[in-house]
Image 1: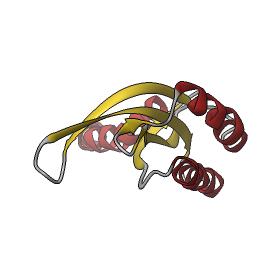
Image 2: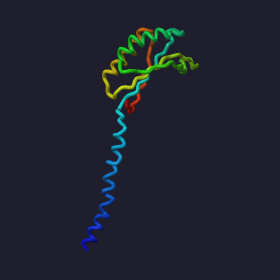
Image 3: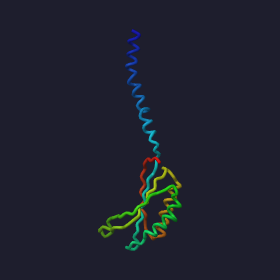
Image 4: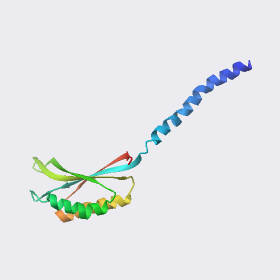
Length: 142
């Protein structure tokens, strides 16, 4: 009788033990990726000034060297782009632009301040009304 009670208890206990182990079985797979919380930010810098291409490639190169590199020393990526939107008159408007992307640790006040300074200087230097800023939460490893 004792053997029957013991085997019955073990049979009833086995599913509970399995259920308790599920979170632990999943945790190492999640933690082993080495990925950290980050924010990927894209900044869209329009090149048009008074309906003409006002920000030349060379002016952008100087801006990146003098302003962006100094404020984002850990790195960034940029490329040329073409954008389109519907203007006030309802007709499509197009503009050449540069897109700058920076991936930084989530919650980095230092990087946030640097990005705000880059935007402010671009607007001041090139007479732009706005720079589009898009932030996306993610995970990354280096």
